Length: 430
Image (tube, rainbow, N blue to C red; front, side, top):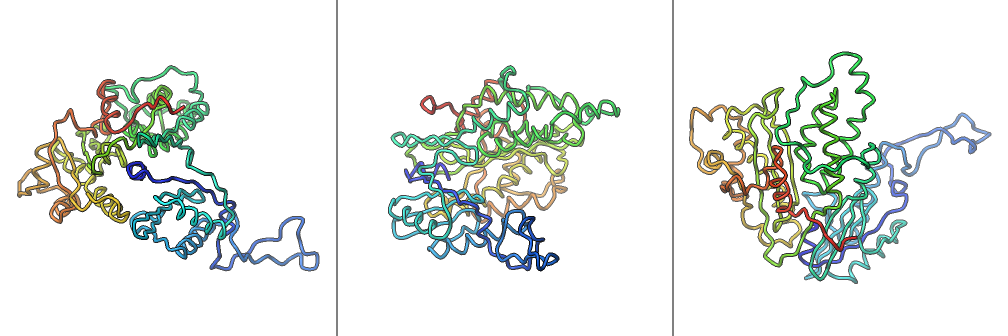
């Protein structure tokens, strides 16, 4: 949504719900032992029946969310069918969005009095903390330049904490997240009990999880390297740990980069790029899929993952990747339509692929002995194209910005593709 409210120059305010889980209403009978120091001396063996939710209950988060949903709908908001954390409210030309993540709230809209009234309503319903204009949420720094209609998202502070946690804050700085030509496999996992015990002291899974949060939020440039290294968490070897440290070294150099949105007055348009690398996994010979969707050239959704089945040709691998991207395109199209501010989603979303065979299979399906074995679920892309949700197009390989999501690239290519999807430095951001 960042590119949308930048494009329309909407207000972005932030609020926080104090002790959110204490607001939940219980629908089940839940009992707990009497608290130490607050026992009833006349009935020491009795238990307490909870009337409202408290922290620590497995129902706490769900009951809070249901209660919030009930109260915000009373004010006229509607929950998005396609993203349950997003609420919308429309009144003529006035547009208001509310984005909820547990107890963190973003209010977005084009009318200040309406936003103020939402704040007042929330403050009557719950104990709220007004944080003013959004500047930092969920470990993401928000930089805004309203004159240039730019918004940048950065996790430099979060990355600094990650580097210190894994003692990489004084390491050398890397230029790329994964070296071109590197090969990782299960054959590099420790076999002897001595080597396995030594690697148990390495915080491999914790490092992967920490990097993954940054990757999911603002760092599509490390999606491929995280996808590959995350496969060895059960029994990592020294080469795998070296690869993870290389990602951290790269993030140390590039920690101040922003994922930038806005800066264009062109009509809002969504494009998807898909790519695949053929049988790159040395253990099971599966291929790697990758896609990235952009809104006016800025990345809004991305994924890098190993395919579920073995492809026996480059064309099949690319076809599977395009099918995966098509499903994401359908969700994006539905979600953006639900927001009612992107007129262009009434037209098909372009999915751009660099393999002529995959494009032909999707656009003009023909029976062929080389493709008869392809699993039926991957042919969903043909139905999606047929009903007008997406359109598949060919692009030269060197222009496919999804390329870094399927393989390690040389530094120049990696940086060029990262820049082309909105990853930039903002000099005035400090």
